[in-house]
Length: 357
Image 1 (cartoon, rainbow, N blue to C red):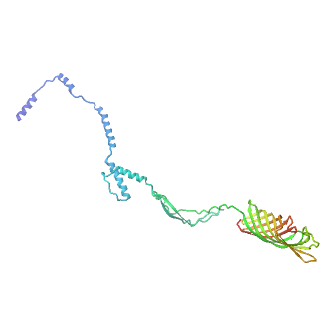
Image 2 (cartoon, rainbow, N blue to C red):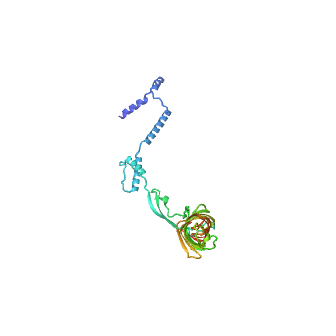
Image 3 (cartoon, helix red, strand yellow):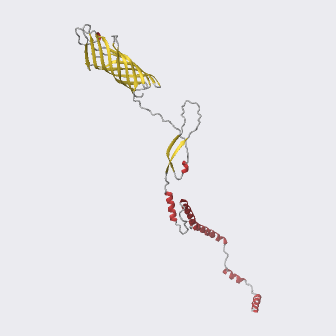
């Protein structure tokens, strides 16, 4: 065997083939040509880009694991009761539906009753001004507080400062005031020179027109006592013997209307001028005729004489708070009573307000 190998080796080493140029020319077309390596570079880059794009588009198991981790963490935070979901048990549609349900759920508002108390500063130094400052006092104001469940820290407070503000005074409609008026007077027949004490009592209502002007009306019961010579009487009947004097007691309903002007008004005090006219309605007239040589005779007349605006009323009024004093004087412009006599009066009346001015 060794000898055979040596024989082949010797034979191959001794073989010599002559080189012919024409043989290489015939063989060269059959040899593979060299390809341009630069042509393959664009194709390689395109293949790499397509592979990267497909790798990014294809879902991987890592995403499922991430969603599983988020789902498990949320369920553990809510109750720590749900079991861990494996990759095979994860349903992507269920995860999406649960997330949507949690987003659509509206938070409930809670009402919490809190009592807020402000103790206030102990010492406050205020410079002297013309304004009147009221000291602050602790106030407690229980009220419902609406707290959003997702933002409880927005109303996380324990105390707040409240400043007490007095309500502005409401503008009150002034409907006037009613007063009780009573007082004595001296009644006489003008020119007779004899005065008799009489009495008056009644109600008067005053309505303001402006700051200074007002109107008033009332009704008074008066008992007029007077005495005069018979010569002041104007009657149609004349007797053979005329009385020398006449003594009269008359019950009169007096209805005055007037206008008032305020001269001075300061705080609760005022000073007014009053002027008007009164109508007399004679309720009852009792006359005693006094004769010189015969006994006295009495005559009674009821409701027969009315005198509209027959007396001028003049007065001044001083008022303080809810009471006042009114000196007055009444001047006749027509005859009064059965005898058409000029009956005049003057006196002082006390006013007691029944309503606030």
